[in-house]
Amino acid sequence: GIEEFEDCFFGLLNVTNSVIKENVALAGELPGEGGGLAGPVYVEDSLIHDNVAYGNGGGSSGGTLNDCQVFSNYIEPTFPGGPAVWGAGVNQGYVSGSVLRDNVAAGVGDIRTYGGGAANAVLYLTQVYDNRALVGGGAANCDVDRCTIYSNEAEEDAGGLFFGRARSVACSILWDNTPDQMVDLLGVPVNYTTVQDGWAGGVGNLRRDPMFLDPPARDLNLMPGSPCIDS
Image 1 (cartoon, rainbow, N blue to C red):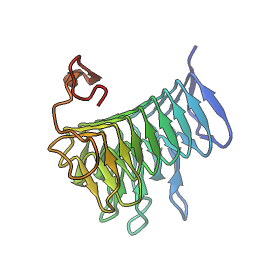
Image 2: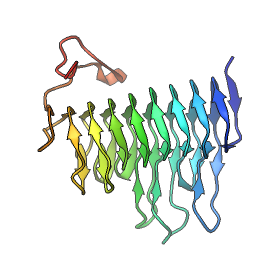
Image 3: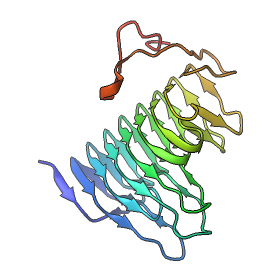
Image 4: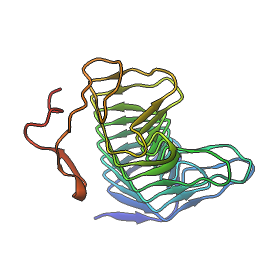
């Protein structure tokens, strides 16, 4: 059966088939790290939700997540005048075959929040949707490979993806993010990716409707005949 945990995991652990929920990472002189998980934790086939960090990584900070659902986690800055905070769903680490949704990086005063779904991480075969942040509603400073970045929102810039560090995007879909799909300050490589309204540069990029199966129900599988299949 599924195990439920309401204590944050920290360090070298393997966690499978579990629920990690309703934990809080508080802050001292430095921002808190990892509301649900912190450090090199391996997590598979688990739910990570409704965790809070007064700092970075509301759901997870530094973990490896495979086939997980990461949702409804929250971060906000530690204190007015403090450092920016990153990754309401995930900060750092590696995420594959997972869903990051409905995570919120809330600003306080003039403190920046980056990456509603994820920040400073590697995302592979992952769906990122309905997340919110001040900058980078879907993700910020992430390597993105074979991912769908859909219907995320940023209060300022980069509803889908934000890049202020050298990363890359490949074989992915950016669609229906607000106010824009991507803001790239460095010229990161974007290749074989479908971007709503198009993307200048790169190789094999498309701007055609990806033909999701049922977007209102958040079924983001592709319909037969989608231009994104094998593109």
